[in-house]
Image (cartoon, rainbow, N blue to C red):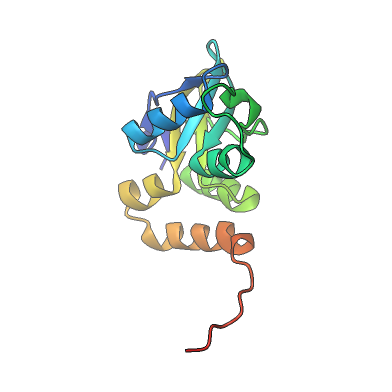
Length: 148
């Protein structure tokens, strides 16, 4: 199966100069946790709801005046629409990411594929579960047991 069969096509995007608060509001309204960030027509980064929480809110940034460009991730892993599902899953596992921007041969953003897309649109629940287990490993800190 190819990524273009399951990706979310023509995703909403934000501009690098948009305020963090405006992007957070867009994400709320769209009910998404990931937003591709553009500089004009060029994909330059991405931001997640976690980025906003950890890099902006927890740091006390003025989210109404600070741009999303200040907190976005710029080291992007992308795939093409013709990428095989297994190859995309391997990238997600290797780099421990839940979403991949999909770009065409000209480098234009044409979609996003997520772990949820793999699970829901392919019915590959077992594969999605395995990917989630691998990408979530570092996010599980050792926590002491709480006595009852």
